View 1 (cartoon, one colour):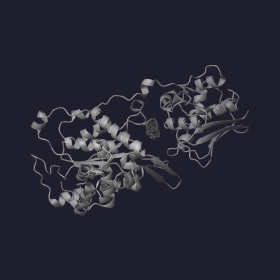
View 2 (cartoon, rainbow, N blue to C red):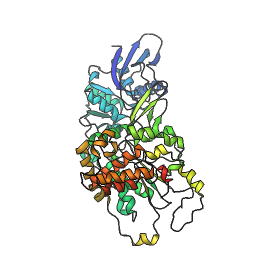
View 3 (cartoon, rainbow, N blue to C red):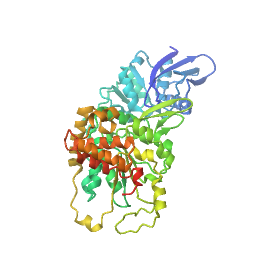
Length: 504
Protein backbone atom coordinates (compact mmCIF):
# COMPACT_ATOMS: atom_id res chain seq x y z
CA UNK A 1 0.00 0.00 0.00
CA UNK A 2 1.38 3.43 -0.97
CA UNK A 3 -1.52 5.37 0.56
CA UNK A 4 -2.57 5.75 4.22
CA UNK A 5 -5.51 7.70 5.60
CA UNK A 6 -5.80 8.72 9.29
CA UNK A 7 -7.91 11.10 11.35
CA UNK A 8 -6.68 13.93 13.55
CA UNK A 9 -8.11 17.24 14.81
CA UNK A 10 -7.52 20.94 14.24
CA UNK A 11 -8.45 23.73 16.63
CA UNK A 12 -10.50 26.72 15.53
CA UNK A 13 -12.00 28.73 18.35
CA UNK A 14 -13.82 26.33 20.65
CA UNK A 15 -14.27 23.78 17.89
CA UNK A 16 -12.03 20.82 17.07
CA UNK A 17 -12.97 19.95 13.47
CA UNK A 18 -11.73 16.62 12.07
CA UNK A 19 -8.71 16.63 9.79
CA UNK A 20 -8.08 13.76 7.39
CA UNK A 21 -4.34 13.04 7.11
CA UNK A 22 -3.57 11.41 3.74
CA UNK A 23 -0.04 10.14 3.15
CA UNK A 24 0.92 9.06 -0.39
CA UNK A 25 4.22 7.61 -1.61
CA UNK A 26 5.19 7.83 -5.27
CA UNK A 27 8.24 7.08 -7.41
CA UNK A 28 10.61 9.89 -8.33
CA UNK A 29 13.25 12.03 -6.67
CA UNK A 30 13.02 11.92 -2.86
CA UNK A 31 10.94 14.77 -1.43
CA UNK A 32 8.61 15.50 1.46
CA UNK A 33 5.69 17.84 0.80
CA UNK A 34 2.85 18.86 3.16
CA UNK A 35 -0.21 20.51 1.62
CA UNK A 36 -3.58 21.60 3.02
CA UNK A 37 -2.90 25.13 4.36
CA UNK A 38 -0.23 24.17 6.93
CA UNK A 39 1.30 26.89 9.08
CA UNK A 40 5.00 27.05 9.93
CA UNK A 41 4.83 24.63 12.88
CA UNK A 42 3.21 22.00 10.64
CA UNK A 43 5.72 22.53 7.83
CA UNK A 44 8.55 22.00 10.31
CA UNK A 45 7.11 18.58 11.21
CA UNK A 46 8.96 17.12 8.18
CA UNK A 47 12.28 17.28 10.01
CA UNK A 48 10.85 16.08 13.32
CA UNK A 49 9.09 13.11 11.69
CA UNK A 50 12.17 12.09 9.70
CA UNK A 51 14.44 12.18 12.77
CA UNK A 52 11.89 10.41 14.98
CA UNK A 53 11.41 7.54 12.49
CA UNK A 54 15.15 7.03 12.02
CA UNK A 55 15.89 7.16 15.78
CA UNK A 56 13.10 4.65 16.39
CA UNK A 57 14.89 2.30 13.96
CA UNK A 58 12.29 2.53 11.20
CA UNK A 59 13.11 2.93 7.55
CA UNK A 60 12.48 6.37 6.08
CA UNK A 61 11.46 5.95 2.41
CA UNK A 62 13.62 7.57 -0.28
CA UNK A 63 10.54 8.39 -2.37
CA UNK A 64 8.19 11.30 -3.12
CA UNK A 65 6.12 11.73 0.05
CA UNK A 66 3.00 13.86 -0.17
CA UNK A 67 0.95 14.61 2.95
CA UNK A 68 -2.47 16.17 2.46
CA UNK A 69 -4.30 17.67 5.43
CA UNK A 70 -7.97 17.94 4.46
CA UNK A 71 -10.10 20.02 4.30
CA UNK A 72 -7.72 22.29 2.42
CA UNK A 73 -9.43 25.56 3.42
CA UNK A 74 -9.01 24.91 7.17
CA UNK A 75 -5.73 26.34 8.55
CA UNK A 76 -3.58 23.80 10.43
CA UNK A 77 -1.22 24.82 13.21
CA UNK A 78 0.98 23.37 15.99
CA UNK A 79 2.93 20.11 16.10
CA UNK A 80 -0.03 17.85 16.90
CA UNK A 81 0.04 16.43 13.34
CA UNK A 82 3.54 14.91 13.81
CA UNK A 83 2.18 11.61 15.14
CA UNK A 84 -0.47 10.99 12.45
CA UNK A 85 2.00 11.91 9.69
CA UNK A 86 4.62 9.50 11.07
CA UNK A 87 2.05 6.69 11.43
CA UNK A 88 0.81 7.41 7.91
CA UNK A 89 4.32 7.01 6.48
CA UNK A 90 4.81 3.72 8.32
CA UNK A 91 1.48 2.36 7.06
CA UNK A 92 2.08 3.56 3.49
CA UNK A 93 5.47 1.82 3.44
CA UNK A 94 4.01 -1.39 4.90
CA UNK A 95 6.12 -1.29 8.09
CA UNK A 96 2.98 -1.51 10.27
CA UNK A 97 -0.58 -2.63 9.39
CA UNK A 98 -3.25 -0.03 8.68
CA UNK A 99 -6.40 -2.12 8.98
CA UNK A 100 -7.47 -0.52 12.32
CA UNK A 101 -6.73 3.11 11.59
CA UNK A 102 -10.41 4.05 11.26
CA UNK A 103 -10.94 3.15 14.95
CA UNK A 104 -8.60 5.86 16.23
CA UNK A 105 -7.77 9.53 16.12
CA UNK A 106 -4.16 10.64 16.55
CA UNK A 107 -2.50 13.79 17.88
CA UNK A 108 0.95 14.36 19.29
CA UNK A 109 4.15 16.31 18.81
CA UNK A 110 7.26 14.19 18.22
CA UNK A 111 10.64 14.77 19.77
CA UNK A 112 13.64 13.85 17.60
CA UNK A 113 14.07 10.76 19.76
CA UNK A 114 10.56 9.53 18.96
CA UNK A 115 9.08 10.50 22.32
CA UNK A 116 5.70 12.23 22.41
CA UNK A 117 5.36 15.71 23.85
CA UNK A 118 2.16 17.23 25.28
CA UNK A 119 -0.26 19.18 23.10
CA UNK A 120 -2.75 21.94 23.81
CA UNK A 121 -6.45 21.47 23.22
CA UNK A 122 -6.46 17.81 24.27
CA UNK A 123 -9.74 18.13 26.13
CA UNK A 124 -11.59 19.76 23.23
CA UNK A 125 -10.26 17.14 20.80
CA UNK A 126 -11.08 14.23 23.10
CA UNK A 127 -14.65 15.50 23.46
CA UNK A 128 -15.16 15.54 19.67
CA UNK A 129 -13.43 12.19 19.17
CA UNK A 130 -15.69 10.60 21.76
CA UNK A 131 -18.79 12.01 20.08
CA UNK A 132 -17.61 10.56 16.76
CA UNK A 133 -17.14 7.14 18.35
CA UNK A 134 -13.36 6.84 18.03
CA UNK A 135 -10.60 6.22 20.57
CA UNK A 136 -8.05 9.00 20.95
CA UNK A 137 -4.31 8.24 20.93
CA UNK A 138 -2.27 11.12 22.32
CA UNK A 139 0.82 11.86 24.47
CA UNK A 140 0.78 10.50 27.99
CA UNK A 141 1.37 13.98 29.42
CA UNK A 142 -1.94 15.16 27.92
CA UNK A 143 -3.99 12.08 28.79
CA UNK A 144 -5.17 13.24 32.20
CA UNK A 145 -6.65 16.39 30.66
CA UNK A 146 -8.39 14.46 27.87
CA UNK A 147 -9.75 11.92 30.35
CA UNK A 148 -11.89 14.61 31.97
CA UNK A 149 -14.38 13.81 29.19
CA UNK A 150 -16.57 11.17 30.81
CA UNK A 151 -16.60 7.78 29.06
CA UNK A 152 -14.09 8.88 26.41
CA UNK A 153 -11.56 6.22 25.36
CA UNK A 154 -8.18 7.87 25.87
CA UNK A 155 -5.06 5.87 24.97
CA UNK A 156 -1.89 7.50 26.37
CA UNK A 157 1.46 6.80 24.71
CA UNK A 158 4.93 7.91 25.74
CA UNK A 159 6.56 7.37 22.34
CA UNK A 160 6.04 6.55 18.69
CA UNK A 161 7.17 2.97 19.36
CA UNK A 162 4.35 2.46 21.89
CA UNK A 163 1.77 3.59 19.33
CA UNK A 164 3.22 1.25 16.70
CA UNK A 165 3.26 -1.68 19.14
CA UNK A 166 -0.42 -1.05 19.85
CA UNK A 167 -1.37 -0.92 16.17
CA UNK A 168 0.60 -4.12 15.51
CA UNK A 169 -1.26 -5.78 18.38
CA UNK A 170 1.83 -6.73 20.36
CA UNK A 171 1.61 -4.40 23.40
CA UNK A 172 -1.85 -2.86 23.64
CA UNK A 173 -2.17 0.53 25.32
CA UNK A 174 -4.56 0.42 28.26
CA UNK A 175 -7.23 3.14 28.31
CA UNK A 176 -6.45 5.91 30.77
CA UNK A 177 -8.76 5.94 33.80
CA UNK A 178 -8.37 9.02 36.01
CA UNK A 179 -8.25 8.58 39.75
CA UNK A 180 -11.62 9.54 41.23
CA UNK A 181 -9.78 11.59 43.85
CA UNK A 182 -8.48 13.86 41.09
CA UNK A 183 -12.06 14.90 40.28
CA UNK A 184 -12.75 15.90 43.90
CA UNK A 185 -13.02 19.59 44.69
CA UNK A 186 -9.91 20.66 46.66
CA UNK A 187 -10.35 22.52 49.95
CA UNK A 188 -10.39 26.32 49.97
CA UNK A 189 -6.94 27.87 50.30
CA UNK A 190 -8.28 31.29 51.35
CA UNK A 191 -11.16 31.98 53.74
CA UNK A 192 -13.40 35.00 54.28
CA UNK A 193 -12.84 34.49 58.01
CA UNK A 194 -9.33 35.91 57.49
CA UNK A 195 -10.83 39.32 56.65
CA UNK A 196 -11.63 41.30 59.79
CA UNK A 197 -14.27 44.01 59.61
CA UNK A 198 -15.72 45.11 56.24
CA UNK A 199 -19.10 43.56 57.03
CA UNK A 200 -20.89 45.70 54.45
CA UNK A 201 -18.45 44.66 51.71
CA UNK A 202 -18.82 40.99 52.65
CA UNK A 203 -22.59 41.33 52.50
CA UNK A 204 -22.40 42.85 48.99
CA UNK A 205 -20.03 40.11 47.83
CA UNK A 206 -22.42 37.47 49.18
CA UNK A 207 -25.26 39.01 47.14
CA UNK A 208 -23.02 39.17 44.07
CA UNK A 209 -22.06 35.51 44.49
CA UNK A 210 -25.65 34.35 44.95
CA UNK A 211 -26.98 36.08 41.83
CA UNK A 212 -23.75 36.05 39.76
CA UNK A 213 -23.78 39.88 39.68
CA UNK A 214 -20.86 42.08 38.66
CA UNK A 215 -19.44 44.27 41.44
CA UNK A 216 -17.10 47.25 41.84
CA UNK A 217 -15.30 47.96 45.13
CA UNK A 218 -13.94 51.45 45.81
CA UNK A 219 -11.75 52.35 48.77
CA UNK A 220 -8.32 53.59 49.89
CA UNK A 221 -5.21 51.38 49.61
CA UNK A 222 -4.87 48.67 52.23
CA UNK A 223 -8.56 48.29 53.05
CA UNK A 224 -8.73 44.66 51.92
CA UNK A 225 -10.20 44.97 48.42
CA UNK A 226 -7.75 42.50 46.86
CA UNK A 227 -7.98 40.21 49.89
CA UNK A 228 -11.77 40.10 49.53
CA UNK A 229 -11.50 39.47 45.78
CA UNK A 230 -9.13 36.53 46.24
CA UNK A 231 -11.62 34.88 48.60
CA UNK A 232 -14.67 35.60 46.46
CA UNK A 233 -14.30 32.46 44.32
CA UNK A 234 -14.58 30.32 47.45
CA UNK A 235 -18.19 31.38 48.09
CA UNK A 236 -19.48 30.99 44.53
CA UNK A 237 -22.00 28.21 43.76
CA UNK A 238 -20.53 24.83 42.82
CA UNK A 239 -19.89 24.14 39.16
CA UNK A 240 -21.85 21.47 37.32
CA UNK A 241 -19.98 18.84 35.31
CA UNK A 242 -20.94 20.58 32.07
CA UNK A 243 -19.72 23.96 33.34
CA UNK A 244 -16.45 22.45 34.54
CA UNK A 245 -15.95 20.79 31.17
CA UNK A 246 -16.67 24.02 29.26
CA UNK A 247 -14.29 26.06 31.43
CA UNK A 248 -11.55 23.43 31.18
CA UNK A 249 -11.97 23.19 27.39
CA UNK A 250 -11.37 26.94 27.01
CA UNK A 251 -8.27 26.78 29.21
CA UNK A 252 -7.06 23.75 27.28
CA UNK A 253 -6.92 25.83 24.08
CA UNK A 254 -4.07 27.87 25.56
CA UNK A 255 -2.40 24.97 27.37
CA UNK A 256 -3.41 26.44 30.73
CA UNK A 257 -5.64 23.65 32.06
CA UNK A 258 -4.60 22.40 35.50
CA UNK A 259 -6.16 19.22 36.79
CA UNK A 260 -5.85 20.28 40.42
CA UNK A 261 -8.29 23.11 39.67
CA UNK A 262 -10.97 20.83 38.21
CA UNK A 263 -14.44 22.08 39.17
CA UNK A 264 -12.94 25.21 40.73
CA UNK A 265 -14.24 28.39 39.15
CA UNK A 266 -11.49 30.23 37.21
CA UNK A 267 -10.06 33.40 38.71
CA UNK A 268 -8.20 35.65 36.28
CA UNK A 269 -6.51 38.89 37.30
CA UNK A 270 -4.77 40.59 34.35
CA UNK A 271 -2.42 43.50 34.97
CA UNK A 272 -3.74 46.98 34.17
CA UNK A 273 -1.28 47.23 31.27
CA UNK A 274 -3.12 44.44 29.42
CA UNK A 275 -4.28 45.27 25.89
CA UNK A 276 -7.75 44.85 24.43
CA UNK A 277 -6.57 41.78 22.52
CA UNK A 278 -5.26 40.26 25.76
CA UNK A 279 -8.72 40.65 27.27
CA UNK A 280 -10.95 39.52 24.40
CA UNK A 281 -8.51 37.25 22.54
CA UNK A 282 -7.22 37.40 18.99
CA UNK A 283 -4.24 36.63 16.80
CA UNK A 284 -4.02 35.38 13.22
CA UNK A 285 -5.23 32.05 14.56
CA UNK A 286 -7.69 33.41 17.18
CA UNK A 287 -7.17 32.24 20.73
CA UNK A 288 -9.23 33.06 23.82
CA UNK A 289 -8.41 36.08 25.96
CA UNK A 290 -8.86 36.74 29.66
CA UNK A 291 -12.64 37.12 29.48
CA UNK A 292 -13.01 33.67 27.89
CA UNK A 293 -10.44 32.10 30.23
CA UNK A 294 -12.71 33.43 33.02
CA UNK A 295 -15.70 31.51 31.58
CA UNK A 296 -17.98 30.40 34.46
CA UNK A 297 -15.57 32.14 36.81
CA UNK A 298 -14.34 35.58 37.89
CA UNK A 299 -12.46 38.30 36.02
CA UNK A 300 -10.83 40.57 38.61
CA UNK A 301 -9.65 43.96 37.39
CA UNK A 302 -7.64 45.66 40.11
CA UNK A 303 -6.91 49.40 39.80
CA UNK A 304 -9.74 49.70 37.27
CA UNK A 305 -9.16 53.35 36.22
CA UNK A 306 -5.54 52.51 35.36
CA UNK A 307 -6.67 50.31 32.48
CA UNK A 308 -6.77 52.02 29.11
CA UNK A 309 -10.30 53.28 28.50
CA UNK A 310 -10.47 51.57 25.11
CA UNK A 311 -9.55 48.28 26.79
CA UNK A 312 -12.38 48.61 29.31
CA UNK A 313 -14.91 49.39 26.59
CA UNK A 314 -14.41 45.96 25.00
CA UNK A 315 -16.03 44.46 28.11
CA UNK A 316 -19.41 46.03 27.47
CA UNK A 317 -20.83 43.60 24.90
CA UNK A 318 -19.53 40.37 26.53
CA UNK A 319 -20.99 41.47 29.89
CA UNK A 320 -24.41 41.49 28.24
CA UNK A 321 -24.17 38.57 25.78
CA UNK A 322 -21.82 36.12 27.52
CA UNK A 323 -19.97 35.49 24.23
CA UNK A 324 -17.24 37.13 22.16
CA UNK A 325 -16.77 36.80 18.40
CA UNK A 326 -13.28 37.50 17.06
CA UNK A 327 -13.25 38.37 13.37
CA UNK A 328 -10.14 38.38 11.23
CA UNK A 329 -9.70 38.69 7.48
CA UNK A 330 -9.12 34.96 7.03
CA UNK A 331 -11.34 33.49 9.74
CA UNK A 332 -13.77 34.04 12.59
CA UNK A 333 -13.86 32.43 16.01
CA UNK A 334 -16.57 32.41 18.65
CA UNK A 335 -15.63 31.97 22.32
CA UNK A 336 -17.84 31.74 25.42
CA UNK A 337 -17.40 34.56 27.94
CA UNK A 338 -19.88 34.10 30.79
CA UNK A 339 -17.61 35.71 33.36
CA UNK A 340 -18.42 37.56 36.56
CA UNK A 341 -16.73 40.96 36.66
CA UNK A 342 -15.13 41.91 39.97
CA UNK A 343 -13.31 45.24 39.96
CA UNK A 344 -11.51 47.43 42.48
CA UNK A 345 -10.37 51.05 42.45
CA UNK A 346 -9.16 53.89 44.64
CA UNK A 347 -11.52 56.83 45.30
CA UNK A 348 -9.06 59.38 43.86
CA UNK A 349 -5.60 59.58 42.23
CA UNK A 350 -3.73 59.66 45.57
CA UNK A 351 -6.07 57.02 46.96
CA UNK A 352 -6.85 58.59 50.32
CA UNK A 353 -10.11 60.46 49.75
CA UNK A 354 -12.28 59.86 52.83
CA UNK A 355 -9.47 58.12 54.76
CA UNK A 356 -9.73 58.44 58.55
CA UNK A 357 -6.06 59.45 59.02
CA UNK A 358 -4.43 60.29 55.66
CA UNK A 359 -5.26 63.66 54.13
CA UNK A 360 -6.26 63.69 50.47
CA UNK A 361 -4.64 66.47 48.40
CA UNK A 362 -6.56 65.84 45.17
CA UNK A 363 -8.71 68.64 43.79
CA UNK A 364 -12.36 67.97 42.86
CA UNK A 365 -11.32 68.29 39.21
CA UNK A 366 -8.66 65.60 39.60
CA UNK A 367 -11.12 63.28 41.35
CA UNK A 368 -13.71 63.80 38.59
CA UNK A 369 -11.15 63.11 35.84
CA UNK A 370 -9.91 60.00 37.64
CA UNK A 371 -13.39 58.52 38.02
CA UNK A 372 -14.29 59.67 34.52
CA UNK A 373 -11.85 57.11 33.14
CA UNK A 374 -14.66 54.59 33.70
CA UNK A 375 -17.34 55.35 31.14
CA UNK A 376 -21.00 55.69 32.07
CA UNK A 377 -22.10 52.77 29.83
CA UNK A 378 -19.60 50.42 31.50
CA UNK A 379 -20.48 51.59 35.01
CA UNK A 380 -24.15 51.17 34.15
CA UNK A 381 -23.50 47.46 33.50
CA UNK A 382 -21.98 46.86 36.94
CA UNK A 383 -24.76 45.70 39.26
CA UNK A 384 -23.24 46.52 42.65
CA UNK A 385 -20.97 49.49 43.43
CA UNK A 386 -19.75 49.57 47.01
CA UNK A 387 -17.39 51.40 49.31
CA UNK A 388 -14.67 49.56 51.20
CA UNK A 389 -13.60 52.13 53.84
CA UNK A 390 -10.38 52.14 55.78
CA UNK A 391 -10.60 50.45 59.18
CA UNK A 392 -8.49 51.86 62.06
CA UNK A 393 -5.79 49.39 63.21
CA UNK A 394 -7.15 49.29 66.79
CA UNK A 395 -10.55 48.21 65.47
CA UNK A 396 -8.88 45.42 63.51
CA UNK A 397 -7.09 44.18 66.64
CA UNK A 398 -10.35 44.11 68.60
CA UNK A 399 -12.40 42.59 65.76
CA UNK A 400 -13.35 38.95 66.11
CA UNK A 401 -12.63 36.43 63.40
CA UNK A 402 -15.20 36.80 60.62
CA UNK A 403 -17.71 34.32 59.23
CA UNK A 404 -16.15 31.48 57.28
CA UNK A 405 -16.44 31.03 53.53
CA UNK A 406 -18.15 27.66 54.10
CA UNK A 407 -21.03 29.29 56.03
CA UNK A 408 -21.44 32.03 53.43
CA UNK A 409 -21.32 29.52 50.62
CA UNK A 410 -24.15 27.47 52.15
CA UNK A 411 -26.46 30.49 51.99
CA UNK A 412 -25.28 31.28 48.46
CA UNK A 413 -25.94 27.70 47.32
CA UNK A 414 -29.50 27.78 48.70
CA UNK A 415 -30.28 31.11 47.02
CA UNK A 416 -28.72 29.93 43.75
CA UNK A 417 -30.74 26.71 43.86
CA UNK A 418 -33.94 28.78 44.22
CA UNK A 419 -33.03 30.70 41.08
CA UNK A 420 -32.32 27.56 39.06
CA UNK A 421 -35.59 25.98 40.21
CA UNK A 422 -37.52 29.12 39.27
CA UNK A 423 -35.92 30.21 35.98
CA UNK A 424 -33.00 27.79 35.29
CA UNK A 425 -30.46 30.64 35.31
CA UNK A 426 -28.94 33.09 37.82
CA UNK A 427 -30.73 36.39 38.40
CA UNK A 428 -27.97 38.36 36.66
CA UNK A 429 -28.90 36.67 33.36
CA UNK A 430 -32.61 37.55 33.42
CA UNK A 431 -33.86 39.42 30.35
CA UNK A 432 -36.45 42.21 30.36
CA UNK A 433 -39.47 39.92 29.97
CA UNK A 434 -38.27 37.67 32.77
CA UNK A 435 -37.62 40.68 35.03
CA UNK A 436 -41.20 41.88 34.47
CA UNK A 437 -42.52 38.42 35.33
CA UNK A 438 -40.23 37.38 38.20
CA UNK A 439 -39.00 40.61 39.82
CA UNK A 440 -42.28 42.30 40.71
CA UNK A 441 -41.85 44.52 43.81
CA UNK A 442 -44.57 45.17 46.35
CA UNK A 443 -46.53 48.46 45.94
CA UNK A 444 -44.48 50.16 48.66
CA UNK A 445 -41.20 48.89 47.19
CA UNK A 446 -42.26 50.06 43.73
CA UNK A 447 -43.02 53.54 45.04
CA UNK A 448 -39.59 53.68 46.69
CA UNK A 449 -37.91 52.60 43.46
CA UNK A 450 -39.78 55.21 41.38
CA UNK A 451 -38.68 57.90 43.82
CA UNK A 452 -35.06 56.72 43.53
CA UNK A 453 -35.24 56.78 39.73
CA UNK A 454 -36.31 60.42 39.83
CA UNK A 455 -33.79 61.56 42.44
CA UNK A 456 -30.77 59.53 41.27
CA UNK A 457 -31.38 59.65 37.52
CA UNK A 458 -31.26 55.89 36.94
CA UNK A 459 -31.15 54.66 33.37
CA UNK A 460 -33.52 51.93 32.20
CA UNK A 461 -30.65 49.44 32.50
CA UNK A 462 -29.88 50.56 36.06
CA UNK A 463 -33.57 50.22 36.96
CA UNK A 464 -33.63 46.61 35.76
CA UNK A 465 -30.38 45.81 37.53
CA UNK A 466 -31.74 47.16 40.81
CA UNK A 467 -34.71 44.81 40.44
CA UNK A 468 -32.42 41.84 39.73
CA UNK A 469 -30.27 42.59 42.77
CA UNK A 470 -33.40 42.99 44.91
CA UNK A 471 -34.59 39.60 43.63
CA UNK A 472 -31.29 38.05 44.76
CA UNK A 473 -31.54 39.66 48.20
CA UNK A 474 -35.03 38.20 48.58
CA UNK A 475 -33.72 34.78 47.49
CA UNK A 476 -31.02 34.93 50.17
CA UNK A 477 -33.79 35.47 52.70
CA UNK A 478 -35.76 32.65 51.04
CA UNK A 479 -38.62 35.06 50.31
CA UNK A 480 -40.83 34.95 47.23
CA UNK A 481 -41.95 38.59 47.42
CA UNK A 482 -39.66 41.57 46.86
CA UNK A 483 -40.27 43.99 49.75
CA UNK A 484 -39.18 47.53 50.54
CA UNK A 485 -36.09 46.39 52.46
CA UNK A 486 -34.85 44.39 49.47
CA UNK A 487 -35.28 47.30 47.05
CA UNK A 488 -33.76 49.79 49.51
CA UNK A 489 -30.65 47.69 49.91
CA UNK A 490 -30.35 47.20 46.14
CA UNK A 491 -30.64 50.96 45.54
CA UNK A 492 -27.77 51.76 47.87
CA UNK A 493 -25.51 49.62 45.68
CA UNK A 494 -25.97 52.09 42.77
CA UNK A 495 -24.33 55.06 44.48
CA UNK A 496 -21.78 55.68 41.73
CA UNK A 497 -24.34 56.27 38.97
CA UNK A 498 -23.62 59.38 36.92
CA UNK A 499 -26.13 61.76 38.51
CA UNK A 500 -24.66 61.19 41.95
CA UNK A 501 -21.28 62.45 40.60
CA UNK A 502 -19.62 59.39 42.07
CA UNK A 503 -19.82 60.75 45.62
CA UNK A 504 -20.22 58.37 48.54
